[in-house]
Length: 454
Image (cartoon, rainbow, N blue to C red):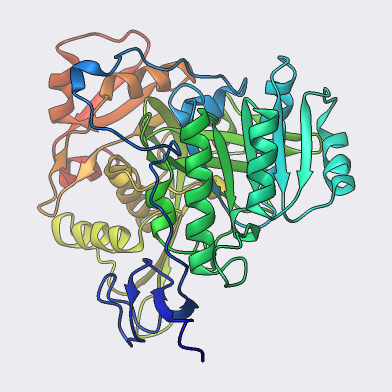
């Protein structure tokens, strides 16, 4: 190798740079993650606006907040925190075929319909392929321009010429710049491409959506620093063979990360699901043991979900435990609490816990419903289908309070439920309020919960 071409080593997981190959990364402590890349030539450093930066006092900065631009898709606006912030750099990840490109094309359609210029840059599809997909979604105006290109220098020139109100890059792993000698999709190319797009977004106050491929572990492919550089990281969840999709923010500099958006995949594209509780509870069994309705909070939105459990005698010496849609270790802990504090002998039984609809819930408020579903299946008693359960369970068998109890109760009442089993300590947050048309059943521990169904 020539002397003027030095190489460096980058960690594929966290982007840590080292002068030589290492077996274990000092940054993320992962093994065999270093790859060799040609060192990029030294460049003059620039601020994200593409100009020399000068220090400013806080009093010199205008407090006026930039006006957000609505996507006209209420579920997406909810996840973004109220709309698109000018100059924001947003990353959308998800499994192949789950609907990332479809959703962003729908956003482009609605913003272009307002007469605002929109630029859709694709490095994976031809204009004819995008036109075929657009034909399923609906009519598009001429304010939407397509660019099938992977060279970032050409893309930058087009953005500066068109000055779009929104730009979509599909996908970041296909983009490349000549300042880095490695191939597109490599650690250094993805990092450098994101840095260029960051300068474009911040310098021109142009919001940019990036589509990101994911690995088999579900993380965005490329260096971990990619998620640190962008303002917002959105993930599509759900089985691509099923009809529903869940959009969740795992990072958002402009809003909450607790909100989710629920969509349904249809022939004409992604449709919003304004009331996911009815959608999740559709087709519930009647008078079946092991089925309990729980209420979980996703940001400011209460969602009713059905939790099912099946407990049966094990045919082998080692009982099997399976959890689908919730944390496996949490289920094992709740079963241990049932055995120790409520006297249920579960050590010789297989147990299967499932949250229907394929949705994933990790909020501690679903503990009580999981515990009751397991007990219901084990003792073969039926929990009334007009009953909602929520509460956190401790290792001592106590049932602890959860936040937003009143919102959960009101959602249950709106959907026609008649009873709510809740922690006794949550009654204090109601401050003596009487909610007409629904019966509140407070419980303080696991033993008193099981005693309700004897």
